[in-house]
Figure 1 (spheres, rainbow, N blue to C red):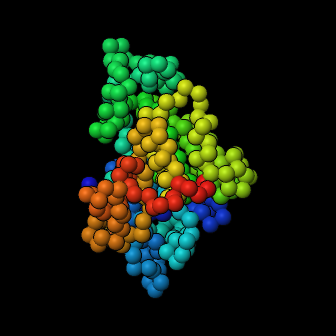
Figure 2: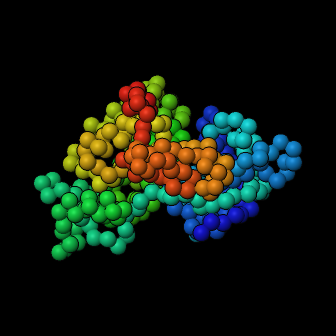
Figure 3: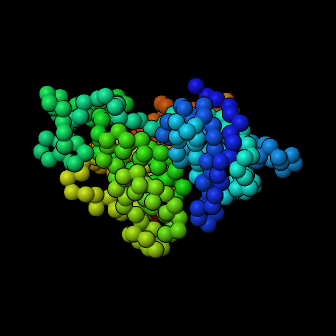
Length: 316
Ligand code: FES
């Protein structure tokens, strides 16, 4: 169900140069919002009467607290809209529409625990298979292909820049479900690793790369894949960030036979599938185009057509 709420700003703080975290009270949206979904919101509080941009802006959930009735987003100032948003003060109100879109596939909380691989000892989070429920890994993968990820899976999250935002809420949910969460987090520089502390508090195992080498590995975050902890056999890979990075992720997933999902960013006018302004080309010519706002923003990684050359350049 989608709600339109007059969301009260609780905090709107600068967390890095040009990057802000906004938290609002929006209990109906918070009660329904899933990882990977987004809100479409006005960027100027009601006090503004002259310079408010006409269009709403889409922002993925960075965090949701259903009990407290709060949602948070992470955003970078890119233009007039986000500049106005940075001026919102606690106590002011923003019109928020959501939750919108299709989110990430999550493990079934009640599904049996599948062994990671018969020839490889189970990882720590998968060390307690339910007696009598042991099944071959092929069975687990067939369930993933049907959109059912086994409980307590080992998952890789690959985020670049602001693409880390939806992965933080996802990581929080996955850790709660008992998954082993390995996060590969790339940014331009140390100061832009704004979600690192939160990810570590959540309990994710973080692998960091920066373009300038000021933190972690110097270079593309995808270079770190070979440094996965030994015996880690991922059941699923999730990614959000630059297209070049996600093209690398898609190639890695294909080579390793790992199912995956990516969250796409797009300019959006309506946000609800009515204007066709967010169309993205799918891999199969039979499928044609999909709408990021309503068919996505999360797509199976093997459905997307990455442009020629993407995945060939360095990024993080
Ligand atoms: Fe209008 Fe997606 S933004 S169809």
